Length: 307
Image (cartoon, rainbow, N blue to C red; front, top):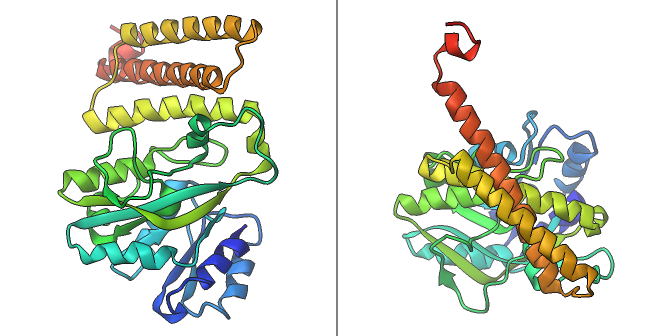
């Protein structure tokens, strides 16, 4: 995958010597260093830097620290950038207010998409298409995605970089580290811009075509949303609120299962069921945060049952 990604960087419309390329080896056990060395003959400004502690946020922060340019663009090793990708991102930084920019993420399927796939489900695969117009984004439920993202280096470092409590680590499907950074950049007064013609194709791995993987993904998205809300506002739902969310989600799943059994098997029904699974993940994480907060508020003697 890394080779295909670097090939797309080598094919950028900008002159190769004007681009600094930092490959972060995030504790890999594959041929990442070898592939990077091979590409150095075509990309003379390519460097491979180590980040031994696993985690997407750590890897991106390592790249942010290692880069020397004013603008840092991120692309994942399982993504391929279109030739004009970087040039179209860079042009929006002529506006000094812009601190982050990213573009469309198209999905690249290993075969025909599953029959149950729909635009409402593709968002859980990191698809992003906000239409043909360049626009500033205010955040909320829609924002840029880390596999097609650029930032001004120093404002991003001042904002703390990518949150180490969020983002993928190994098989853990947590996310939200990109949205968290973008929110901090906005809070500092910067503008975040969607650039529709700065496009990357994000490869969908074969194992992600299974419903079992998708269920894990949406469940972890719910947990991510709870962590994100907790970090953003410094609070979380109460245990009673979390229990109510769980009950409502379970009732929704049961009703959806009955409709499914009766033949109502539309993509809308599946999206609704997946949303309920995400709510259960959200409630579970809220419960964990509540219990943890209560535990930390106890005096040490009371924690161990000693009076």
